[in-house]
Amino acid sequence: MGRLRAVSDRVVESTEYDEETQGAFVEMMGPELLDVAFDELGDLALVRGELSDSLRLHVSALQRLDEEDLW
Image (cartoon, rainbow, N blue to C red):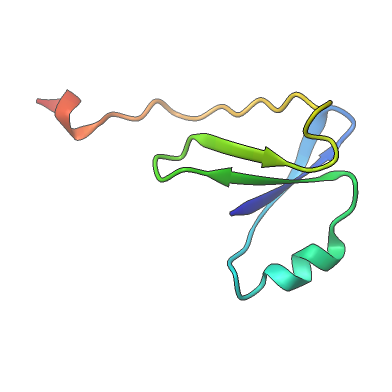
């Protein structure tokens, strides 16, 4: 799980955390912060937060190759 901070229309910070350190990040959470979760392949699976309905989040990643595509 990770957290992205958006200012205006740009994501300016990305912070990763685990369950042990999640408490500190929850205390810092404000309306400009979005919670994001990625599935095991790195695709964006979930966006939560007050801005998630009105903010369009663009995520770009390198194309991944599945092992079966290599043969």
